[in-house]
Length: 440
Image (cartoon, rainbow, N blue to C red; front, side, top):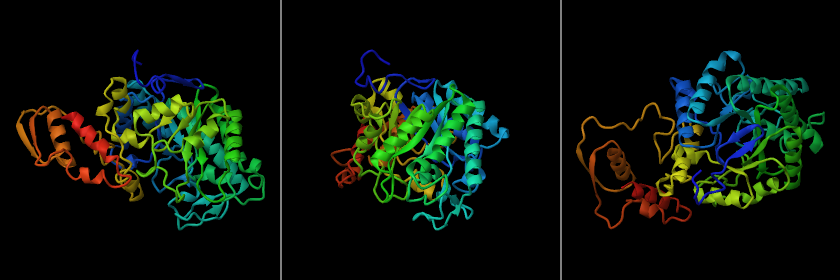
């Protein structure tokens, strides 16, 4: 960290259990569908390595199911066999070679699976899935716990620095915890203590298997935003129980996928869920990570400096600019390509069974395909119009060594982005104009 920086808290190191992270930034887990492309291991290694090269302290992979019945979709990410170790070792090594740390996320989709054989704690259908889950037996629940343990063991063998156990956004572990999706009357349902038993057993048994060396992060739902979800008091009690069970760090999630309240779109105020995160932070003794609509260095610094959180999770912002943290460290904040919260090429693509990319950075998830290399022959290039396409073309051509002249008839750069930024809640377009202007 530089001696003088406007971000002393965000750029300070932190220790999570036995794992030391060089700054307070984490690239949160996200679905990319890179596993569906050609050369999936190489693509994932390149994707994560570039973010590590950009100085993000910790990376969390997309969610891997520990079992066939936990897959989000047929052919989705699965890690349940030692035969898969070589591909994971390549991903881990790529990140470590760039000085980063990486956790594997373990995720069971439960009733969110896009499969006719979905399972759940009760036969209650999700409003965003036409399929009704089959109720898990007690024996099957025990098997899923062991599946999580085996997956964590494999992650440790592969060299991951830790695992994140996915317990938010409405996936299976989240479904076990609340009455909305758990109406069981056996030892896995009924009272609050019985409903949280499933995730707690996973944490306890994972810790018992992997020992103290592997970091364990739990993604807890800080705010469900659905009827019959957990109360604030229950969330605190659950967080405290997770700490006691052996969790090193709590990463917060906001809202189930079926919640009708926007949580990550452009109209959501930056850092707007600080109150829910702080509710957990002030009641536990382990680090807590803030998430959702954190897309600038100043928001990150404020969340940490205020004591609301110890780290920040940024997923989409690391799609938009893999060198976000590096630019902060080097005092180049104005050169950060900020996520505008549009969701058009990340979430919308995933829901359409496409591979993720980014509207403001089409190189995201295409690191092996789109490389900015010096031009063999330098040319004089005229670019007519300074809309987003013109600005991107001009900047990219200049980066390759061409002599570029940009022509614009209007009084200001940006084209129709200058109209878009005036739409209520669309002020993030100011950031895009600012970014391109800094490159000229």
